[in-house]
Image (cartoon, rainbow, N blue to C red; front, top):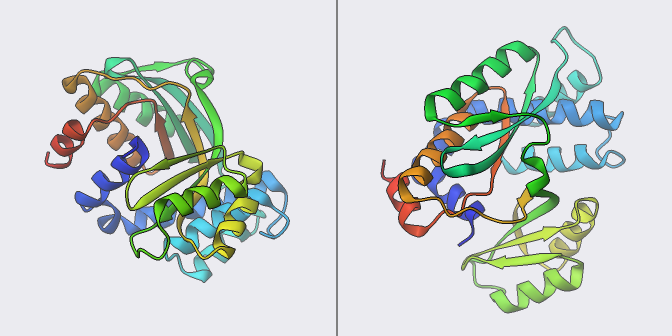
Length: 253
């Protein structure tokens, strides 16, 4: 099982996804608003990033009214403060590289909160570009094969034929990495083939992974978790290799 799948499993096992649905909707709404502003359009059919953001929101069962309000905020309607997207970089314990993507209406507040997590867990914030060179921008599609309608080998070949760059088989789940600009096209092809897709999103995929010792790996996971729990943080990427033993230990913490 890959790091992405293990982290999602850990978060589910700790009940995080269910407990923080309100926070999830806030993060999804911010992602939509920024996608509208960045793409210069509130139409998902012509705004590539907005299409991805709206699909994620619908997959998360976000109400349509909330999606529409987020689009309006991105268009500058209403009285809410405008959001800006900021990326932070640094190292978690064990030399694990991390990229933190945030959406905020208060840059100083967000920077202070991110620095506080680095300091408390024992990481080190870095300058822009200090770790991003270790990652490639990709599209990520997660396919659920648990229903048994399509076997793993056939689903893998479907993804490759559709244009996937790489496919990781994690048992009941396939992680399909694509060229970012081809994400929606490949997603549509796989949906048309009858595959069950649970995730479609941008991903910063590490070029190489770091195998930290168990103690540092656990501290790195704690840093990632604390970062994700910040209201302004949208997504955290790392190059940590999460072993089964570390995943089980952290999930039970």
